[in-house]
Length: 529
Image (tube, rainbow, N blue to C red; front, top):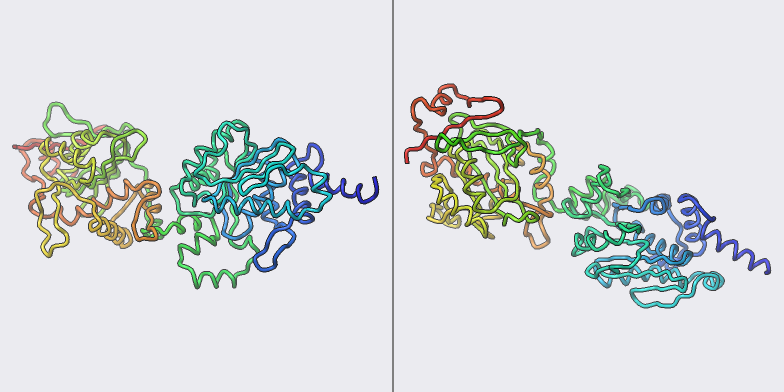
């Protein structure tokens, strides 16, 4: 063996790292390989050596030391290229390693694998001869004679179910058309000993990428989270200022965030003012449910027992309240049925119900009790789909203070005979815009941390439509409750004020406060009909 052959063998081993190497030693070996033998295609400079920045070196060290890694990053800082180079390195220098890479579309999958192919194309001949032979080389797959494989595919595909996958890389996870399904297909593979790398810029909160990132920061899942801001690319403040002058604020924060909060909350085109939402002071409510008194008609007590009803303020004698309700199908894994109660005099959101329940029971058991509990509150129920079942149940139970639809596009919007709030292309923007204004201007006082979190993830699409990410049940019930504030003072919706002498309600009105006994708030409702 001549001197050149000895040197080549030494360098080959140096690219692979020593036996039983630590993650730090392997990261050094990878950096040595990239900087000396790996070439990438630069948009302006053409073919250049892949010299790693410090952020990329630290990331690779984490990938080598952790099984589950999630990287939140700014756009265009070279991490997709890093992932492709890493996939090539662990398959070319080690046998029996199957790497799956998921991308948004087949075009993106092809481009990602092309980065690995470009590296293989320009490694020196002696390294290609020293390493495994490339057996299969098509647009979505590289297969080597050492039984290692890189397979790149769009996220719509099921990634090699039943295969023994060493590493799964999910590129731009937040922007996949089906990120939840993609993760569901990857998780079982990784759970039997494989490794997972999730890479993405942010796309608002509420999606699976955000959930995995949040878990990595709170220690509630297996992921190690890494964040790299726009400055990790080596760009300076002048470059950032130029971007800030040209891009909409949501796009600037999405593509070039300075911190994780900026990346997630401000990147999803939030409909509601994030600064206004952050000003609300959340407090812990009493949790329980309304229990009917068997011996008194339409009288309820609040049982503080950890149920689905959250209460911040109990009903006050003479108080006027409005309730908005959004109705779900009732399935255990579906959307939630939800209701908000607002004190019409103060604007305080005093109660919130949230849970899974059949639509008819939501009306006859939950909303009926909640309405009477809060002084025969005006109840507005979204009448779309399953809401009709809830309204029918409420009407059948003779709850009289139900909102009736109005023709809002008329000069004088008089009530019709149709019960409930109908969400349409006309009424939804109105409800959302007016809720946004009241939250921004402080007309509402919101204390529910979960409702605030859902408001932050309510976003506007390119076509102007609005929706939650992934849920907006709380947003819609609060928006409907806010609409009810415009009608709760009308004579047709006025709750009954005549109270039978000697009842609990009578003495409450005299005392101007509810009667409280052992965490139970007694609100008596006696009706003559």
